[in-house]
Image 1 (cartoon, rainbow, N blue to C red):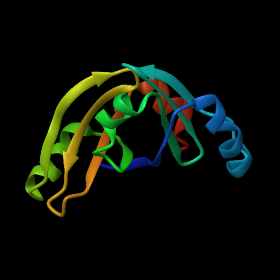
Image 2 (spheres, rainbow, N blue to C red):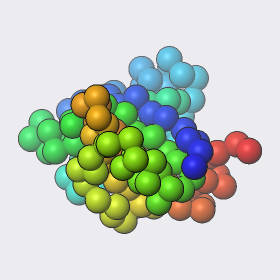
Image 3 (cartoon, rainbow, N blue to C red):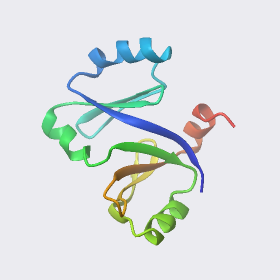
Length: 125
């Protein structure tokens, strides 16, 4: 199992207001933008911006980072061996498959296995 990319999560009420500064800071345009349930998501540089009403964002605030891996099944085994608790089991999402875990030290992380199209487009090998 390999970590392909890690995102720091940023929370905002308005995605369109948040992106210009991040674009300026990173020198990049968003490489991923989508809606997931009632929140909007955009990835720019090493940031994943999560936007929407506070009550909707709160559903995802238990994770401090989003980590893209190449093999979610292998990762799950590693997490369980390290006494992490899978708080949201493997599920399908718009970018591939994901799960949420709370590490033994209490850190909450979203892990994602991107679909082949995203890996091919966004991961430099």
